[in-house]
Length: 150
View (cartoon, rainbow, N blue to C red):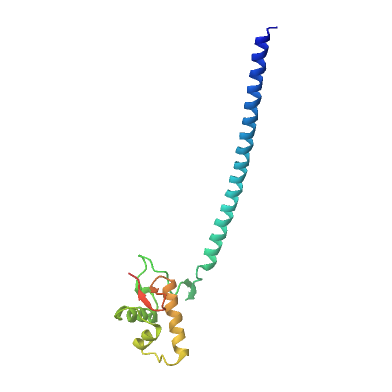
């Protein structure tokens, strides 16, 4: 056999062995990354499920009126009118709206004729204000003052 041909075959075999090693390494890296992606997908799906469960548990339960389920203070949307709120909450919104600027709960109480010197009468009002904030009807500033939402 021709020594030159034998040398070329040996060199080509060495090239192919090296290429095979590189491809095997790349295949192992691809498989590892695929496994990581599969884990990431499972984690993402679990997080989505947990968030959905948390949102469902945070959604306020409707009250019962006349045997029918209703939300006493609905979330503010373009399709929900202020007139759907209970009368007390409508009065609270009107008092905040009529103020010259952001107001404290005490000022709203004064406007509504509530004896704000009695904490037992002021705290339920503060709770209603916060509930209106939670439903999107009012906005609470960091200094605990309330304003209407635009």
